[in-house]
Length: 334
Image (cartoon, rainbow, N blue to C red; front, side):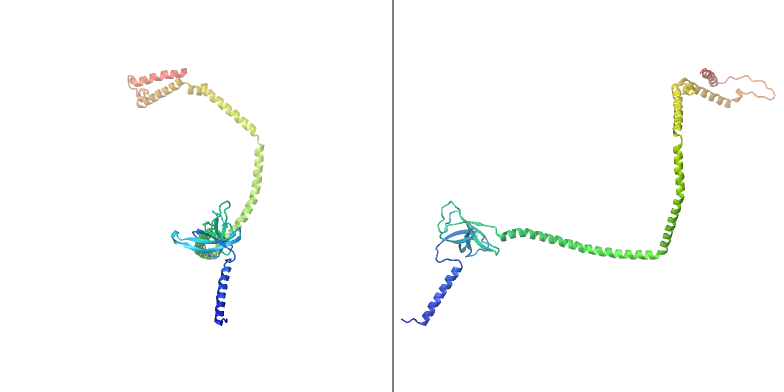
């Protein structure tokens, strides 16, 4: 039986397609020569997990992700089918932890076997879990830093704006300083002669101070000699004399306070003080009457007139005269 050339080409094409398919599937991780078991797990978010991502136990690859299906009736959760080698015993309560696969950002499922529990049947449901990978940690640590950088940038912008304002003020200040320096230079140039005269006066004052110092030195020497002479005086004897004088004065004041002597009696004897007051009052009345009626006491005539009878003074005058006499007698007794 002779096979045509077209049939041979067709068989070769079919074999090539089958080899391409199985080779691609094998490269994806499917093993045609070993049996596998399938398990399911539901995630809220798979963070970029795709089919054919590896499944590991303690770093050893024991399977791969078979398929991913969205469950729209369960709030768009994702159902992931895991294909694990038949020799791996998966128990109930085992965890399928979604984690990062190295630094490149890939994903894998780390299988955590729960020991001491019955074996999970084929097609059973695993417990979903997620692990904060390197990228999540980087995001977690980077976001606060970025916020701080934004705040720092804002503060730097404010400082730069203030520096701009400060630069304007500084320019104005420098301009004012330049104007002041110019005015000062003009003032110095205008008053150069006066400044020279002032400096000459200062020099003269310095020379006069030097001369004054020379003149003060002998005066200070004399003052030192005068101080030495004051130290040589007998101050103790002078102080003792002053103390004696003060003692005598205290003795006199004690006699006056005790009523001894004229001053003592005048200060302590109230009757004497009262009589002196009465005598003074009577004398004042007598002098007043004498000034008003001098004819009662003095009679003067050139031709010898007939003497008039003596008129007795008024009762007030009589009483005044009578009061004078005993007062005088009392004073004499005293």
